[in-house]
Amino acid sequence: MLLPIVHYNDPILRKTGAKVDVFDAALRALARDMIETMRAAPGIGLAAQQVGKAMQLCVVDVSRADDGFDWELDGNHPPLELIMPMVIVNPEVVVHPVEKETIDEGCLSFPGIRGDVARRDAITAKYKDADGVPHELVCNGMFARCVQHEVDHLNGVLFIDRMSKKARAPIEKKIRELAARTGGGKA
Ligand SMILES: [Zn+2]
Image 1: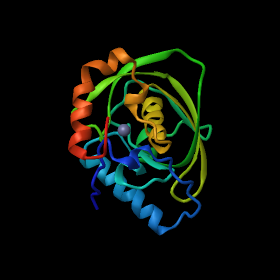
Image 2: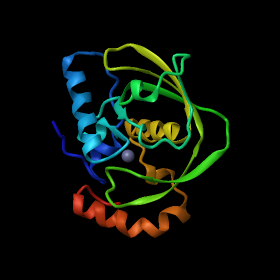
Image 3: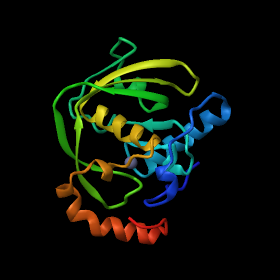
Image 4: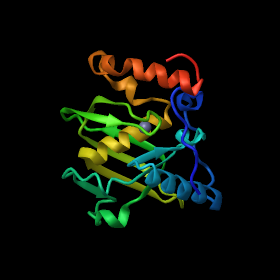
């Protein structure tokens, strides 16, 4: 089932998600709907806040955004098509002390708005899947960027917060107009 995507500046986007304690059929159904919604949008990631739920849950599918990134899941290197789409619950991300890369990002809650965001190029993420099974993911490139963007959402952080003043200036007007349309308050 397709879910409506919440746009900036709906207050739900600023809420920190509650930790998921119950891994039941309802959680799996929500994750399935979020995957369907992400693919239809289309997008490579979607956080629960973006469908109006402040929970530590996001979905990712970077199989069509392969920029040559590398990954390791639970110490193995499974084929990407086996691990995508990925359901990420209660994540804890540690960024590796590597160089930051600046790349143009978009967000399904900011239709038509893109801007440069600097992020570290490699992460380790500990999380649970939709069945509550714990995993450890190490990845870089677009994979790491996407996970960082989605996990930010789970903590009420948006990509515009991570932009430099210089990157944000050319899109400031569009951001204000979007917030005014959404009726969620001031940008
Ligand atoms: Zn986003």
